[in-house]
Image (cartoon, rainbow, N blue to C red; front, side, top):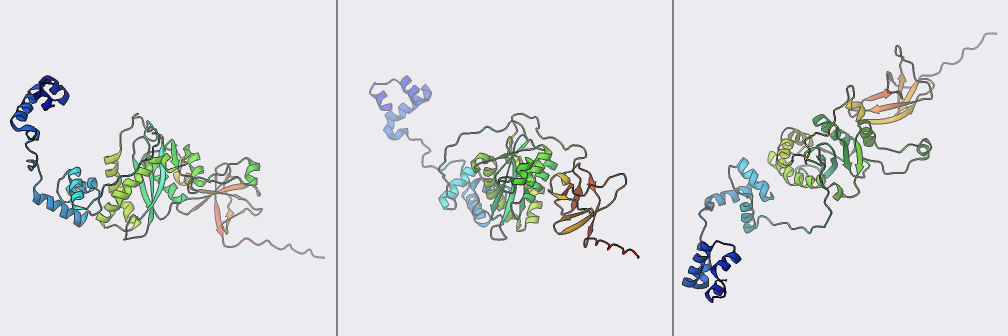
Length: 383
């Protein structure tokens, strides 16, 4: 452009418009071009160290601390920990450049598959995504286990704990913890796994009764008025899947720094320290500030709702057989005993205790028997 101005083919005003600088700056550039040629257009600070550069001693201290304590940490998390634990302030992009130059970090470029975007729900508690993540959470210090995780779709708020396996009991315990902390959500989005939903055809008896087979998790959600939405691909519940990645990057390293290698200790750390900090950092305010969670009804028991239910039939001697155990129904004042041959429901709570209910929801008083009562032999009639 300066060559065109020198040849008279462009004016300084036109050159200023093309270059996107002021007319006065264009005059300065053109003056340097006439005096020094093309080399005069190079910025004077090229090749010179910046006046805002970090001292070399600080740079070495940061890299040494990274090698000693944070090897394998991403630049963003490492910058946070260096400031938090070592008092060394550095921008994460600066640290990224240093780590790349030292060969301590490799940029991760992944080929992205196009997928249509689904907008977040508008209210907190309108939809909560539910999943388990199997991972080496303790690295080499302990056995692999599963992180049970719930993530709100509107805000990204997360609640989680570690369990040995992704089971129905673990799912019920996580839902219980979420309800105690936030309230009852309107819907949950989960995988088509047996821990959450039953994926089988109804039996002949169920077809005759018009019953759709449901898992204990589905039954509990139905009692609480929670809609269960089944995802047909991991991408469908991408919010919780991406949140797993955050845990696998950050939480693993936090456990390493804290020297934690057992599930119980890790869950205490999660509940008392980690969850609040990660939600404060990553959760977003909802579009609509109205909370969609609803409270429990008065008298509604989570212990009796989030449990395993089993139908059983009352025998003629008022005994209920359950898992090889015999339970004798006791008489109660002002309460009729269920008729022999009728069905009762056995509730196994998450603490392992058993509770027996009639179809109408009234609890029965029972006593466990060591053996079934023997029938008395008929008395012989005298001649």
